[in-house]
Length: 477
Ligand code: NAD
View (cartoon, rainbow, N blue to C red):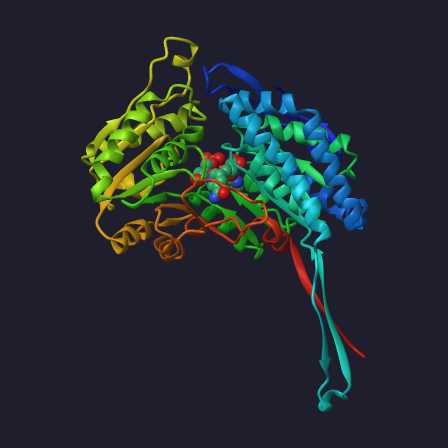
C-alpha cells in the first residue's frame, strides 16, 4: 500500500519515500513518504485554521454525528482495514478482525455517545459584603485545547491511534496525527474514511515519517501544537517531555510496562495458566498490557512452570516481531537471560517453520525461571513473547516483588480468596489491576500507568478531561 499524508483535506505524498517491509517474510508491501518540517508546518496550520473555522464552530451534536459517520465508514471498509493491519504488522488475521478494527470503530462510537453525557456543575455563591454582597452564579464550560498532536506506536496501530483521535475530535480539538513509521497503512485508510465522512478540511490531518529528528519531533516541538497525546516507549516519552517543556505543552502519556501477574496457591490453576498464556503470548507479547513477570506461590510453582512451559512449546499460530530490529532486540534479551543465569523452560530462540515465514521476524514463545528481581531481564521491557516466573512465599513478598519495578502499567492477581483479592489488588503499583482475568476492557474506565508507565489517564470521561480545558465563569448577579 502507498501511504499518503492528509493535510487540510488533501491527500499528498511529498517527501522522500521509504519501503514498508512485511514482518512475515521481509518482502516489501508498500512505500511511505517521509514528511519534512514544511509538511508538518502545513498540517499544523491547517488544523489551526479548522479550529478557527468549521470544526471549531461545529456543535457537540454535529461532532457526535461526524464521529458516528467515521465509525460507519470503518465498518464499511472493514475488510480493507483488516488486510492493511495484517500486512503491516503480520498479526494473526483473527486478532485484527476481532480486536483492532472493531475497537477502532468502537472508539469513535464511544466518544460520540459520551458527548451526550457531558455535565458540568453550577454553584450559587454568596458574594462577601466587602465585594458588594448579594449572589453570584459560578458555572463551568469546557473548551477544546486547540491543535492536538497524536503520536502512536506500531503494536495496535489503528486501535491506539483512534483511542486518541476520537476523544480529541469529540472535545472539539483538531488533530495532527503521526502513526508509527512501521504501520502507516490503516492510518491512511482512516484519513480516507474521515474524508468520505465529510469532516471539515483540517479537522484531522495525517503526516507520516520517523520519530526522532524527523516528523515526530517536528510535530511535538511545534509551537502551534496545544497538547501532545503519545503512546510508545518510556524513553521516547521522556524525550518528548523534554521537548514539550519548552512551550509547557500538556502531555498525556501511555508508555511501556513490565507487567506482573501474581498467582496464589488458592487460584484456579487452569484459569491462571490459560490466562498467562494469553497475557504473555497474545500478539507475540507486543501489547503494552502483556505479562512479562509472573510470581507464583511456592506450593504450586513447579506445577505452574511445567504447564506454562508445555503450553508455550505447543504454540504454533503466532505472529512475528514487527521488524528485524525488534526481533534482534528480543533475541538479545534471550541471550542476556542465559548470561544472567536463567533456566530456559521453553523457547529461547528462532522457530523454523519450513516455509516463507523463515524469512520473517519470528521468535519463539519463551518461558524463563531462576533470575532475581535485580536481573535486567526481569527489570527491562522486552516487548516479546516472553515471561519470567519466580516463586514467592507470602502475600507481602509477592507485593514487594511485583512493586519492585520502574514500571507500573497493569497487573493480574489470580486467587479464589475474595478477601485476598481485595486486599492485594489496590496495593499493586499499577494503573490497571485485573483479578482472575486479563485485558478485559470497558472504554469508560480509566486507562494508564504509574511510575515510568505514563502520565495521566485516558478512557471515557478521563480522555475528555485531558482533551478539554474547564473554564469557570463567575457571574455577579
Ligand atoms: P516508540 O516510542 O519507539 O514509537 C512510538 C511513536 O513515537 C512512533 O510513531 C515513533 O515514530 C514516534 N517517535 C519516536 N521518537 C520520537 C521523538 N523523539 N519525537 C516524537 N516522536 C517520536 O514505541 P514503539 O516501539 O512504536 O511501541 C512500543 C512501545 O509502546 C512499548 O514500550 C509499549 O509498551 C508501548 N505501548 C504502550 C501502551 C500503553 O497504553 N501504555 C500501548 C501500546 C504500546
